[in-house]
Length: 148
Image (cartoon, rainbow, N blue to C red; front, side, top):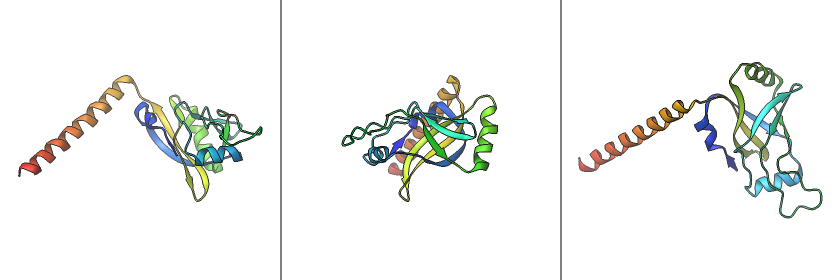
């Protein structure tokens, strides 16, 4: 339903988790319509619970007066061991929780969370240079196959 492509560019992904999301009815309908944005989203741990913040799920078009707020905080459902591990890792400097994707699995809305460390600008340039070098090598191989 929604991908955060920029997250893989801006962060070094250390580990990923799959978490359920507590949603209201109109949020589920808006997600099924394929309208969500993870661009500014992040997750944090408060009082032993993980919360997804700043993720935009627009109001449902056919909703009534009981429609949801588009950028409300949503509780994430994880196992206690995973939450304890996240608490320990996020206390370390530089680690943050970033949503990578939002999808349905067996009828339930899920979010793929990444434990990530921010990239420096030179790391981003290095990643882009590697990707372009790999792409150029693949093109050269394809040209050689066509000639041969």
